[in-house]
Length: 102
Image (cartoon, rainbow, N blue to C red; front, side, top):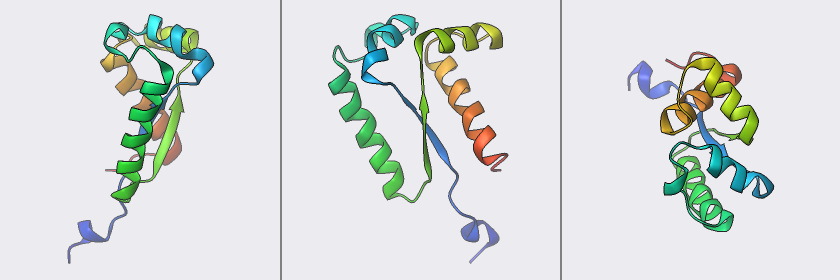
């Protein structure tokens, strides 16, 4: 067994959208047209992803996305409000919680 095998699995962030914010978040996302039409559909997919990550042993952090705050954060950090922005937003939250996991 190597030292790498002894390390705990990295914490993972998943973006989370409250039902009341769904329409606003979809409108704020550059790629919002690719999102499910209904929040319940999105939630089902998000829970399946979260459950899968936990099943592999990853600690999972839900990172809530609010429409205006997310758009403002993306603008301040020079990223788009699509996938690139979501990944960067989540990465910052994960770093703030767990630090450098490398």
